[in-house]
Length: 298
Image 1: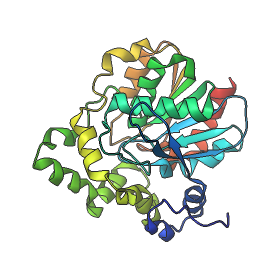
Image 2: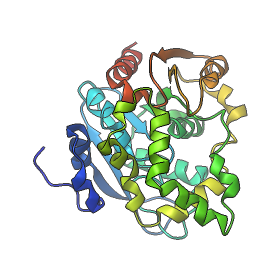
Image 3: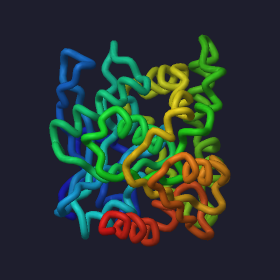
């Protein structure tokens, strides 16, 4: 792709070096999304490509962005209409003053995005915290979700460990801790089995959204809300067919919750991704895409 990077992205985007990262960043679009959350449209960033009968909608993890789908997105878009969106309070979407950054607001914003741009049932794919968002969304808006894919999903786990420290003045200091390059690199090294994948480009993809205005207060607000700790007793209410993909060496959430999801969700299948950590969509994108597409076509 020869076009320039979108002007609404931080200027450091020009330092991306890997073709997949550059290609996805250049594909990011922005829409002024009307929602019940604010009298003004919320500038929301998303990606879209491909054609097919049932759209796929990708939801990223905690303190992340749609750039984490740089390897998975093109593989899915070859076969199906594929979307990704930066959740409210995260990624490159705006963080308007006066808006609550908590699970109910994230769900409302996501529904407004779906209703405005997609308007038909989707295969909803959630990664880590995005899995918890997907569960909450599927239970609240069952008409919007045809199938569910959970990749190393949150839902049973407790909220972000940082949450108990996010009270003034520790809120600022604790959230700033997340911004430190050494901290983010350590988290990335724990997320992969193959440490060679933790490149300079990968670290930039994982931190580029930190340049967005309002990142710090939105992070504090979300974490103080408790996140998705309320979902545990609701997971068994999921009725749509569900695929659970899990890295067999996940050091972020561990592996025990994979079996818990399988036991709780009636129409579910669990597939382990071998020699893989917390991010199969980045570490084993071909395998992950193959399993998702087979699940869709089944």
